[in-house]
Image 1 (cartoon, rainbow, N blue to C red):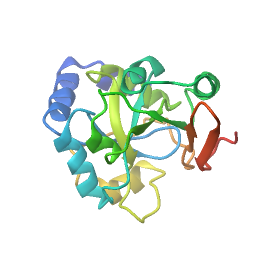
Image 2 (cartoon, rainbow, N blue to C red):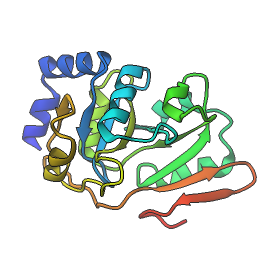
Image 3 (cartoon, rainbow, N blue to C red):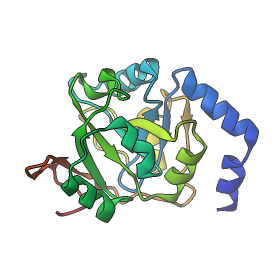
Amino acid sequence: MKELETILSKNSFIKELNETLKNGGVIAFVTDTVWGLGCLPNSKKGVDKIYEIKGRDRSKPLILMSDKKVNLIPYVKNVPENANKLMKEYFPGALTVILEKSEKTPLYITSNKNTVGIRVPNNEFFKQLCSVIDGHVLATTSANLSNHPSSKTYNEAKQSIGEYVDIIFEDYGYTCKGIESTVVLATEENIKILRQGSIYI
């Protein structure tokens, strides 16, 4: 923990990190589920780079992640009560909730859809990382090449996409479970599970 605090408390490093992200940089990091790739939500250059790194189909949207729910709410609108209940119970945790996007969320993140997934991972390193990033929100996807298994360790992430990202963080002992998040579409009428992950609803 001491080493982690030293890295994320260095003003010079934080400045470099934020400058990298503002210039369209992509970073790789551990979460509570699998390793992730991320860039700033308002950086089309960064989003394009994520799709290029993964060889990802542009019809598959990215999701937004943060250390706190409050940072994600401006990116969505018309949040139904059943979605609020899910977020209250499972945030932070391995749940991605898909909601109607707000004007703040660019269409290049959502693959031109009017919805966006939001999540608050329960991983101490990720939380601390987001806390020093300007805006505290990342547009994300898993840190692996498309149609390849998700990276579950630092070495797997480094081997898969390490040479293509601007910064790859070690996990500093805050490892992931290796199972993707559960993805749900929450509307006023019902909750629809789109991907079954480690949380059963």
